[in-house]
Image (tube, rainbow, N blue to C red; front, side, top):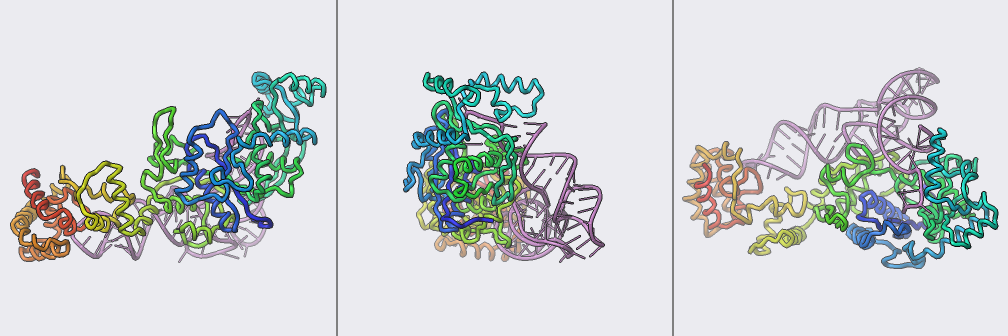
Length: 514
RNA sequence: GCUCUGUUCGUCUAGGGGUUAGGACGUAUCCCUUUCACGGAUAAAACACGAGUUCGAUUCUCGUACGGAGUACCA
């Protein structure tokens, strides 16, 4: 059950380590929608406690992506807020006191073991046939920490500037229980958990500490995150208890993971590329490799389509309704209806949504896309807006992406360079050729009234007068004019291309097609 | 390995002790059309397996199989 006893405040907490994974985008979406649904606040907190993984530009990328999707934060490192700062690196100083509080209350301890010693411990444990290789209640008694050292020795080492970490002291036997909104009742025995590091030797907190402290301080009511966090949730619960914050503990909701289309593993960059779809919302430039990873936006996906598609990956209403605007999603969303099972990411439906939302656009909006495409592909054209608008109208029902207005109608902008093979074999003969000749002779009579509908009617009349079969004859003309066997209304194509151009195309076709 | 977790058409899912197991995407066919789309119609397509409980189980329980996650001084 979703607990709504206190003001809803949720956070999306990405790490600025690279492009934002599409799974993270979905997490942000669910957080946003949940917050808005309950008149709550949606915050974005940057979890940059790992200085070695920090990537320049990743944070601004995250904000740009979320803005594009309309998932704007009420509080964040970008817009600020009463709980600022919202960047953990800027909160560094405040974590230590909490870690020390835990040491004082006996819930944590200092540990001086080096990486080598840790490796050695694990190796020995493995050789001894131990099934649990972790730093825990059993093994900590053999390690170098404030539990095995005298207080004096511990102090001496710290004062001497020796590197140390602070670890949680996980109880030997204790049941840790909590209720997850999507997974239900959880019960984990503390003996299966380890003494996770809370404070790193560089003075930075680990995710676990920072996350719990910040969620508490920022009065987060619900933690909505990916299922990969489920195994560490008991640790987080234990931290709340250890701090004495049990009554302020947020409610957890662990979202099912997005899997590769073949179901093998978490959705990965590699598999996404293999299956030919983006995994990042926006283009992401990887400096070290000097390559750009495709983004949904640049591929032509509309934000409303992506949101709609993502919303349905792991969530569904009890009705058959599947088309939701963000606003509508906020109305109908219900966290309790989030599914438990992981979800395979198949792009097909996203394409369908894109096509669907494109058809909802006005011709004027499509015109903007067309112009953007021209700029992007460096295409020059001397068509008037009036003409371009007609092109948009002509193409709107047959495209999946905005750039298709141009890409699928190239023949409107340039002379055909090749002719559809199958079409030629099938239609460039007999009646078809006769009809093309007929058109070549008679089209000039329409020059003064060169308009799609008029051309079409006359074409139809001519077919009838000559006793030709429409299906035999029109494809040949189409071939001559556009080079293709399929496509938009031929009359309109001819109007848009223009009389002189059509005549030229027919001449060229007769010369070129053999 | 260990801990956690999951399993309804190809995919996303609805449903839930007695149903013709519903929808959407995709696929196929048909209608519309000069063609391609759009639109409309139709079809093929699923309860992982085995026990138990029950008059009855896809639905509840337990196992099995298979999948996923975690297992760092990363988040």
